[in-house]
Length: 182
Picture: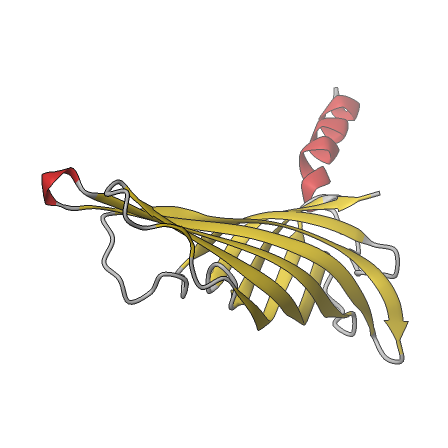
């Protein structure tokens, strides 16, 4: 009976075992996030908002002289707004951000399961506006932008973790789940 109890306790503690999740050359991570706060569409009053959502991929590419790795990857994010006025008038704004990212992952901390990083993203904002008046629809103010961000991931298992990023994209704060690919 004691043997089964020990095995049961080991299985329950598996998610809390240290995995040493240093981001290394060749590491591949896919992250899905929900954003809080946004600069896109700011200054306007909206009745309804779609939360910012994002997906990103990155791969460790270069080891640098020091405790760290530089990654390259891609990003796509979306944020939408809708406004309804009297007499049935409705307008919609949709913001899509497509970007290329690079980050420095600092490996000098002795904290298991933690990946901290900071980077830069070159992105293109696709802005689409439509309303039901038939007067104005189409792409407006599409533009190229450069943004900085800092973030961290904490892995609960060998391949699954949570992440948080602060920066300028489709949102100021991005929270979500990260999947380390083998």
